[in-house]
Image (cartoon, rainbow over all chains, first blue to last red; front, side, top):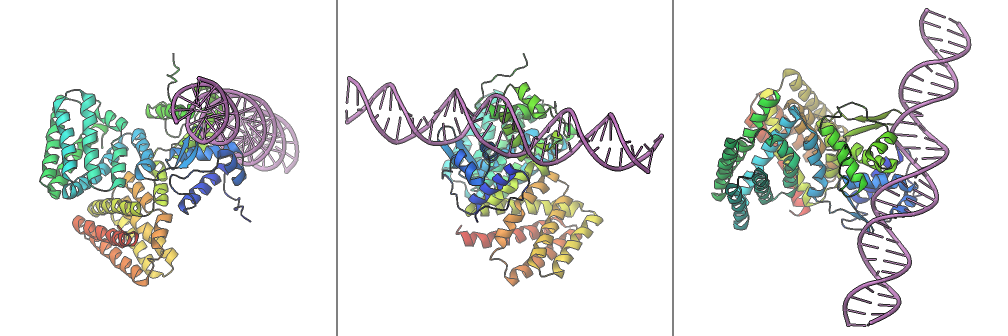
Amino acid sequence: MDDAAPRKGTVTQRAVEEIKAMIAEGRLEPGQRLPTERDLAVQLGMSRSSTREAIRALTVMGVLDARHGSGIYVGTLEAGDLLESFGVVADLSRGPRLVELLQVRRILESAATALAAARITEEQLAAVEAHLAAMNATDDPEEVLAHDLAFHREIASAAGNATMAAILDGLSSRTFRARVRRGHQEPDAIARTRREHAAIHRALAARDPEAARAAAAAHVGGVEEWLRGRVGG
Amino acid sequence: MDDAAPRKGTVTQRAVEEIKAMIAEGRLEPGQRLPTERDLAVQLGMSRSSTREAIRALTVMGVLDARHGSGIYVGTLEAGDLLESFGVVADLSRGPRLVELLQVRRILESAATALAAARITEEQLAAVEAHLAAMNATDDPEEVLAHDLAFHREIASAAGNATMAAILDGLSSRTFRARVRRGHQEPDAIARTRREHAAIHRALAARDPEAARAAAAAHVGGVEEWLRGRVGG
DNA sequence: TCGCTCGAAGTGGTCGGACCACCCGTCTGG
DNA sequence: CCAGACGGGTGGTCCGACCACTTCGAGCGA
């Protein structure tokens, strides 16, 4: 008997677990192609509709990658893809939860920056410098924000932990930052950001982990405190 | 005109964004009921199937809560529900990525433990003690693990950041821990865990954040290092 | 009058089939 | 030999039907 126990709740849920199990057990390797929706439906003993919903759910989670006209493939299973839904949390969070998220980001960002200070290469440092300079060279809020994000992304990447970088990326998602920015875009805020970024960069260039940790914590903490005051923490 | 621009890629993806936007903009409050699938499909100008897939995707993410026979409701939007999919990442991660996840956990766990040391109440401390005692009282690996998890969960909760607690919960998900445990369940490992837990508890009882941070970091770091050696980091 | 039951309506869940849009290997015609 | 047309296979969408479950109120009985 190869048919699993059909006791689980909904049919779709069972399909999700089934496919997840296939991957977890190594029966499906990253990049490998799955059977077609139609075949998979037969294998799992359910209709194509239910199979599709399961696939869709896993696709949204970043586990699977469905390519129109080609087939369904197992995702890279890298942190970046899997943690994409992390950004959704940031998008949907409001009020106190936003402060909590920022606190998590402060903790991780400072740790990442400290790690980066200890192991950043010259090339990576140059990239950080480039974004710092680019951010100082423009006054277009859109562009400033873009280089702000890239600045932090580069540092997180230099920390050598792709998973952490992915989480930080989600926490700093576009919508999230844009929302915080709204009303916080006074000129002195930009100036302050530039000053703090410069401090972070100096600590990185000096390969000073503790200074880097402090600078990053102060940077994120500033926004955090401002936000805490706004939402009535 | 209230019909949005239909430029997005797949129809389902558009539906997901649409519903997410409704929630983000506050048009839908947590706990509120959505229109029926059939009505929603008409509103969005698409078939029920596509609407269903979008709902399914959001349900998996914890944003929506579909109750058979009753209706579709907006979830609590609390961190715990939204970050449930975080556990999937842990379940599906292997090799080096597992080490990275553990490093993230070490950072967050030590920060959370430090926070907890500063603000834990007597009741919470008593709960922590209870799990510590229970874990010392049994040799059943299953039960030991359960109290191990509860011990950390209680501490994370005492840190006062529900979002961080939810993330840590995902990082310590059952499957994850069980997998790490496999082959790591030598008797001295349990003894070591008990010793380290006791150290964490002492730091909490002493309200010493720095000692708590160090004890937690050492605790998670021990597993991390062991795992790093196993996967060839 | 109160309470309980039972059934109908409404909802999400599943199904099967049809057709469309797209990708890709192949085959044809130059 | 190569470029373009072609066809098969795939995921994407839609439809209509039916099933399973929840809910609530009408009707019954005490």
